[in-house]
Image 1 (cartoon, rainbow, N blue to C red):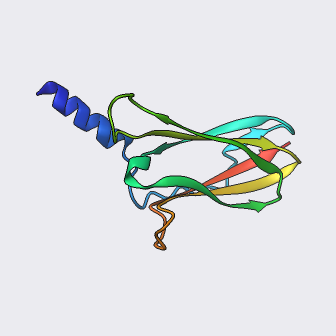
Image 2: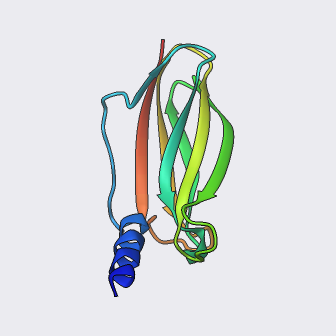
Amino acid sequence: MTNFFCLAALIAALTPQNGNDSKSSTPSYVVKENETFKVELLSNPSTGYAWYIAKKGGSTGVDSVGHSYHVAYVGMPSTGGKETFEFKGVSKGISTLTLYYTRPWEKDKPAQIREIVVEVK
């Protein structure tokens, strides 16, 4: 019975919540030119949801250089994991990356929106 509650707590912790928008004008990342950085977001593709780069605002000083998904627990289907985006600062300035957690076939508002402010020095 204890294992059941531990599993339920784990699933609840890994399940992204709806309507949880994160917006800030303070730089989330400060990087040098040609420096890479990673953004990790909880995700559960078995639900049809995934993170997508919606737009890059401000200067175009940041490029996407990689994307991967890692399951939290191998052998436990539908438990979710983390999506990792890797970006590179390519020119000085401040950029805002907007990522949507959505199902690509749905036209509704994304379940989650993350705005990440990046300053390249």
